[in-house]
Every structure is written in structure tokens, then in C-alpha cells.
Image (cartoon, rainbow over all chains, first blue to last red; front, side):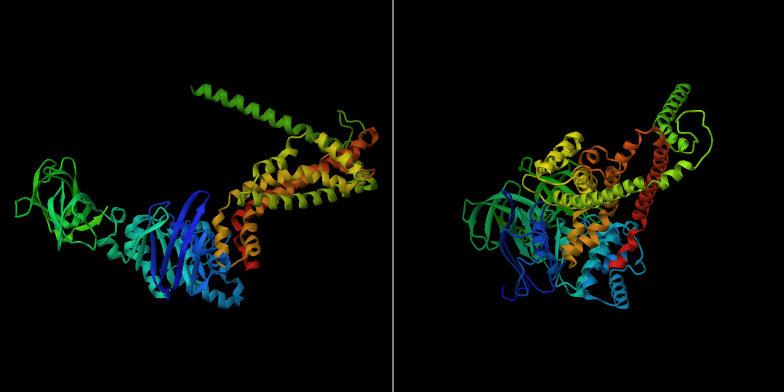
Length: 357
Length: 273
């Protein structure tokens, strides 16, 4: 905690009686690509705006490199922001937009042109200097906003859903570019998004937020494989969440559920007792179907299937589970695929994750 | 069906022509009679002359009245637009306690009969021991022009994205530089529109100028004085014709400026940046 580059200490922000940010503490390391992930209205943008100096926190403290910046106005902060709508100055062309923040450096015209060219080259916009703000596509505007912020050499770059307005293909392209750019410039990025795939692809670490609080902060793989709560599990990727009851606790925990009967799962450091209601979280790709019965396989009925190209998605009803369904993704199931057909469900319970409710 | 539509189009077309004629034909009589060689405004026209223009140009009192109106008009335009910028920015950018009643009070002169305002101001100024003259006229004009300036500027301020100002702060500019480099260029068309509008309102305003003026009249009051003497009337027509042409010129200029501003203003920042 002591050597954190950005330290957010017990920060809260209320608007009237609405608490947008509720006592959040975070430590972000130098050079890290850190994402704030959550549904809209979870407080992630408010937290970013507090970092940028556009909102004053109701309580708490913000430090960057040991310097308290809680009450420092936005124009003096060592942070720069890429706004959600890019905020390209409409009365200026690309070159003037990118050079906007250089006025105080009192550069000669040649130095300024050189810096702008370098910044435009960095975001692959060479030759766009004289383009007007209204003559650019969304992707180009986004690059201009990036160049305009990075030319200031900020200690921290704040990005507020910068890819949200782009179409899927461009967005995926920009994700890779953004990640490469961040590694190239080595600047700490704090990135706000509601898109879990984006957060997983880009980040060194993710903080999952909801209702003004942080539910979990961890590297993407940990968030994906070991969500700390049912809420996080539900938000990150496709997940089957089974409600069950603890039957016995030993080296493993035996949980009975309507869908799978009794299964033994890893304790996952959860302190549970027999009789507790718990959740078993299972990724659809950790379940599979077979058209022949094997040991341990459970009889199921197909409810629906959808072909996704790289895989097929099945919704199944385990026998005796009433209307409860499970989702399975599998590439190589060749059995009969009409709804109502019978199949066998195979699983390895070591992939199951035990969560306390 | 087709015939009905043709008929409707013809009726609407005729209506439009009559409407425009009703609006502008009387105005066109002004320049027409200003060249007529007779002191009586009636047909048939007697002959072509420029003598009314010569009389107008030689009339020292008229020059003085014109200068008075320009002084009052320019002062009013500058001060009410300046106040309008401050007010519009405050109202559109911040949430202030009692904002609605305050804005309502600012807008009130739009609906209060001008003669009431003029009388009230007259009584107030005399009670306070102030003197009447161009300053008191300008004060009255500013009172009625600020709401117009506010309306024009508020729509402009609302129309431009707040995050632009935030982006400027973010890039290291303080409030003053942000206003100068981002807010001002973006609301400039609104400022020009407000200057022209408030100047025009002040320039042809009569009631305030009549109540709050002294023996040194503005142009509308001067013209009204002249109208009582028939032989001076053609000179007033010549003046009217000149003002008409100047107005058309100003409107065209404003429109040209507005269009140029939307397409070409991008180079403006090079001077500052």
C-alpha cells in the first residue's frame, strides 16, 4: 500500500441523498492498466471524475505519487482524460486539438509541429493534421482524443468508456491498439467500462463495482475463474449459478442441489457449515454433453440450442430439476440436437466454485 | 386529385405573395418618395430629385440625433450582451438557489408594457436626483435588452457540450483561458446575434427615449418631432431610406458572418494558440 502510485483512501461521493461512491479504497500501481468495471450507475464514472478533478469527493483522500491531490483543481493535476464522447473541440482542426494542451509550454512553431506529428503517428493518424473536427469518424475522433491527452505526458490517463460508441469490429481492433499503446508509453491507465470482455482483454487488474462499492479487485484471470461472490460471478461472463445446501464439510464440501444432486467441491476458502445455503458457480464451458451414458453422467433434456460459430450453446434441463436449466457450451457434441431430445451431462466437479450466499 | 392540389398550391402561392407585399410595399414607399420632387407624399410622382438627401446631409440637428442614437445603441448592445453572457453562463452551467424566480425577474421586461417601465424609471431617476439624458436612456434600454440577450445566448450556451470545457481544464487551462479558447469561440455566433439584436432594439426604441431623454433627442424622437412640420417630412423619408439600406446591409453582414463562422472558424485558434 505504501508504494502505491495512485492511492484512493476511503473516498465517498454523494449527490443529495444518492451515494454514488461509497467509501472506496484502492491502490493502483505505476504503469498498470486498471479497469473499473460495473453496470451503468455503479459509480465507476464518478470515481474516474473524482480522479480527474471534475467532482470533489464528499469524504476521503486521493494521492498520486505520495502527493495529496484531493483538492487540486483539474487543470493542475498530472492526469488527463479521454472523455466518453471524446469532447473534440469543434472549432479546431485535428492539429489544433492535439496541440491544445501545449500552450503553456511556450514551444516554437517547429517544436510544436514536431510534437503533434509524433502524437498523431502514435495513434496512426499521420496526415490528418488539417482535418476538421466534423470530418472524422468515431474511431478517428477517439484517436485524436488519445493523442491530445497523451501529448501532455500525464502520470495517469483516465479513460471513460472510450470504445463504447464504436462498432464491434472497430472496438476489438482498438482494444488491441490501446493495450499496445499503453505498454509502449508506460503510462498508468485507469479505464472505465461496463463491457466485461473489454475489461478482461485489456486490464492488468480489474475492480468490479456495484452500487458505489468495490465487490472484488483482482487480475482478469482470477476475476474470471475465482469470482468472490455470486454478484461478481453473475456479472463476469456466462455462469451457471446453482443454489444448494451443504451436506457435509471435510477436505471437500458436499453440496446437494436440485440440478446435480450431491457433488463434492473444493472449499474455496469459504467457511461453511452443514445446512448452509450456498451457490455453486459453473462456467458453461466446464460442462459437456454426451449421447451415450458414462459413469457419473446425469440424464438431461435439451431445451434449446444456438450455434455461435466457434461453439454451440445448449440450454438443458437436468432430470428431476423441475424447470431449472443449465447452460452448456461445447464445440463437438454430435448427438441429436432438437429440443426435447435426451442427452447425458458430464462434468468434473473440480471446476466448480463454491460461493457463500 | 391533382387538380385540387394545383388549386391549393395556387391559392397558397397567391396568399404568400399578398402577405409579402403587405409587409414590404409600405416600406418601399419610403425610398420611392424620398426621391420625389414634392413636399407632399402623394401620387402622381412629380419628378426625380436628390435635394431631400442634401437637406438631410446639411441638417446639423439630425447628425446630432443620429450620433446620439449610435452612442446609446452601441453602449446598450455592449453592456446588455456582456451582462447576458454572464447571466446565460451562470444559468446554463450551475444550479443556483432560487434560479427560476431570478430568471423570471430578468425576463419580466419582455412582458411588462414599456410605458410602465419608462414611467417607473423616470420617477425613480428624478427621485434619486439623477439627470435625464443619453445615460438615462441607455440605462432604460439595457433594462429591456438584457432579456433578449439572455434568450439568444442561453440557447447558444445550452447547445454546446459541457465536456468541452472540462476537456480544456483537463488539458491544463484555467477558467479564464478555457472561456477564451473554448467557450468564447463556440458561443461567438450567439454573441454577434445578441449585439446586433440589442443594438437594433435600442436604435429604434421610442418610448424610453422619449420619457428618459432631455432636449438632446435620439433619432426616433428627432424624427417624430420633424413629422409635425410637413415641409420637413421628405427629409425624414430620405433618412428613413438610408436607415433601411443600412439595416439590410447589417442583416446580410450578420448572416454572412454566421455562415463563415460555422465553416471557417477553425483557423481562429492559431492566433491564440
